[in-house]
Length: 371
Image (cartoon, rainbow, N blue to C red):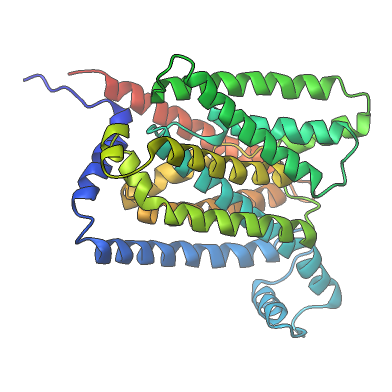
């Protein structure tokens, strides 16, 4: 007997449709699943934080690190570490750890939102063009000499990411009707165009120091992170996370298709544009402080859905926690694998995300065939 497989781009919609049938009576199950997943990821995050703080050129025993971090949080002075070790923890490693957590959360939530509004598991800030737009905005600021600005570069990156996504929507709407396929293709084209623009901006820069900084920045990394940078990015990520969680139920409805979502009371166009702007802001602020760290928004949400199901009421939160752990682990590996030198975080995430993207693409192509 012949069996026709369902096109993969409909998988999320089908799963969401099934979940939608049980919305009135599954709230307790959703909460239990979210709490259980959050506890597991929270435990992994706590362990990852202490390991990240204890490792590096200045080795600090893990038990001493735990006591020192807890003492620092409570405002006390720890006697378990030397003054040098305490300074390394408070001024170097803790800001870097919090930055890695924030960037991971931002990119994972942006990827989750994009996969929902594009109804495609291959959607990602790097694939759609938001990372390229943010990179172009930041590179322009760096080339103009604003290398030390912790406000202009993030602002330019957010503007670049937002304009890139709005341009993708405008291109996809040229025919008078905007389809998900047109959005995805326009995003891929925009990503290629912005990548070329970033390369041109770097190669035409006369300042060798700025050019070198751009190359290192584009590979993604957290060295040089300060508490001031942390204070800038954290509010964006927290507010964006709250908005994403609030919108998670409507993201489920959007997966049913525009017509069904509209019949259920959603202003589809306004909601999609709002989610696009939110994803662009999250991507832009992450790119501004960390450079381009690829595949986080692709790998993490997809892995969370495989384990916890497609319901965005807990996928959004779990993706944020998973993204934080993924980027923190990648940064820890980047700092220690060739110590005292460092690899770029973007290299580590690409080494993991690249094969995962290929596997996902092969699965997508395989599912399109009929038996």
